[in-house]
Image (cartoon, rainbow, N blue to C red; front, side, top):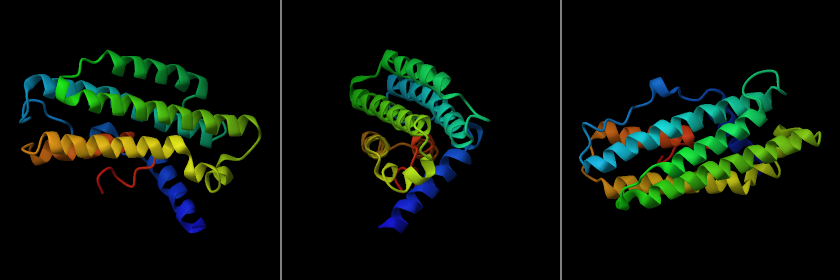
Length: 187
C-alpha cells in the first residue's frame, strides 16, 4: 500500500515537472473532425483553454516544489485558475457535449483545491512531499479530477466513434496533460 502511494507521488511529480509541452502533443484538428462543426469548434476552444490550465498547473507545481524560487506564485495561479474557470464557463457547448464541459470545469476546480491544500501545508510548515505519501496520496480533489477527466475521455470516444486516429490521440493527450495524476487518461 505504501509503495503504491509513493508511486502515485512519483507519477504526479514526473507529470507535473516534466509534462508534455503543448507543441509536442497531438493537436485536435477541427477540419478533420467527423462530427458536427459546432462540436468541433467547441472542442478546439475547450482544448485551448485546457492547455492554459495545464501550463498554469505545471508552473504552480514548480513554485510549490521549489519553495517559491521558480514557477508561478500560488496567488498568481489562484487568480489565473479563476479566470480559466470563467473562460470555460463562457464556452457555448453544443447539447451533446454539455456534460463534457461540466466535467472539465469540475476537474479544474478539483485541481485548484488540490493546489490550495498543497499551499496550505507549506504555509503551516509541513513538507508537501512527505504529506503526499500519507494524506495527499489520497487527496480527494486529485482523484476526483482524474476520475472526471477519464470520464470525459470515455464520453468523447463514445460520442465520436468515427473520429480519426489523430483526433482520438488528441483527446487522450489533451486530457492527460490536464490530469495531474496522469498515468494517462484512457491508459
